[in-house]
Image 1: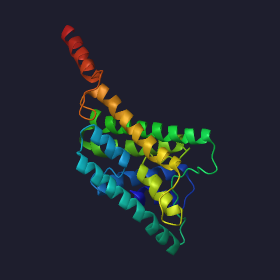
Image 2: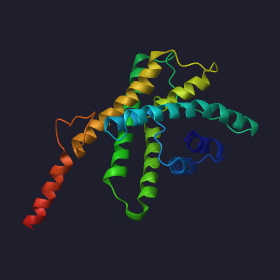
Image 3: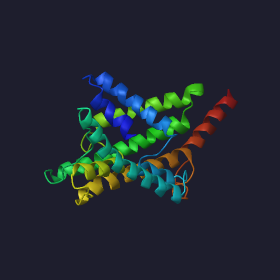
Image 4: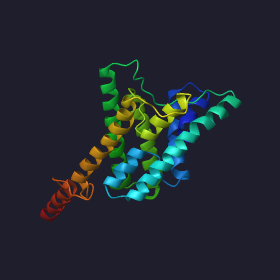
Length: 237
């Protein structure tokens, strides 16, 4: 995922917003297709666990795998970019030492809301809409474009929308290979994004039914009510 989505914007060599968006979209689709639909995102893994889409073992296995991949990827691509005199990759970062509390709050809300919106897009593009024969390619392309849109709209902390990216980049960019020591980092990149994912999961449960951590939502499901209303209208007609 890091190889396909981070490098195009830096290495394509053309200063064009259209080229950047296209390269990023192609990268997102390829990363998913080549890896057979990975999470590569701890917030997504926790959210899917809350919806009962994976068990606890699968959740922490995916989180561990994504963290390992992120920690290895950035050093590898630094060596690659230096050997070919390419622009070094960047990553999502929030400077807690030189930021105000208001900026930290903005970064927290940015990660929370962007992750919430990302997950809602994932639910509806994957589970609620059907694009027929080319469903995978259409829904994945739309997901890629939406991710790029969120990156542009929510710049306060990157956005990462992915705890692995925030922490893996922080470990690499520190130069010491050590985990971040400031609590703001974990609050913004882990707590905010995970809460955004869990909020989206509950909202989706209210809409579509199912369970949230094994429990049904207090309200809904709205989806079944809408289906019943449509069927009753058809019967009347």
